[in-house]
Length: 332
Image (cartoon, rainbow, N blue to C red; front, top):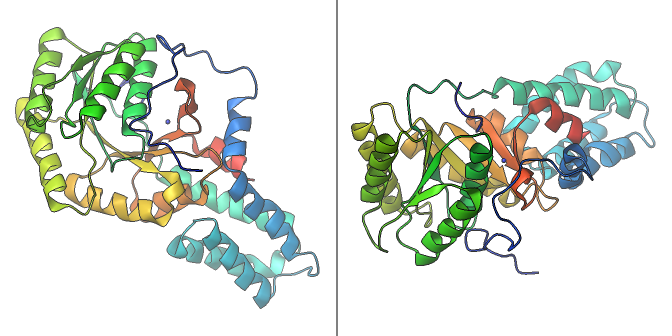
């Protein structure tokens, strides 16, 4: 089977070095609080909307009225679930409205519909044929690409996999420097060139090295200037073509890193990257209490792209494989 990839002024996660005490990461999960409890904490804003705010709708009503439906629609949109996805949920609730007499019944229907949406777009990684399994990482600056690459590399190294990272974001010297720190501490190898080198050349050399070494996993970092820049997309397409020519079928995964706290802007980013490259999976970062978890539902319903990882913190094991059941339970 393929490796398990599928998770005040703010600091730029692509420029932040890992904590000094993180050497080669260990995969033993934190003892307290549990990962599920930390996920619930990270979804606190959405939990309030889907629990306390919905319960408040029935404070003076024992049935679904037009005013309750209107208020519910507002709450779902506020939770970043999105207009179209909210309309889908509201259609189902409207059909069941005569049978709904309290918040418990309403939340049960919502929970079931949300779980169904998440499970429909949840796909396990397919089998990789031969080595290396090539993952191309894309996303705008500031979403956490560098740290996510380090965390994925650390996870796979801890599973006994050999990992090589190619630093193809050659437009920022800091990106290469920080990636070097992360790969060393993850126990992975790094292929890098001088600043301003052709990114496709770095990707090519990385793949060439991975093939000659028999490396299990090759992760390609890429630039993340403004996603509206046509030249960035053309640059990423060139990297993809270069990899495919060298190793037909690669890259096997094109993972888009999105910042959950950007809300609907994440949807527009995903549409642009997907149109240009054909995204195979999404890594959603910063689900740590600053974001509204409804964006996960919106992404699955609107984009039909599976979410492979979610990030609920800054530590190595805070990047978790996305599990629809656990995520839905954490929302309610």
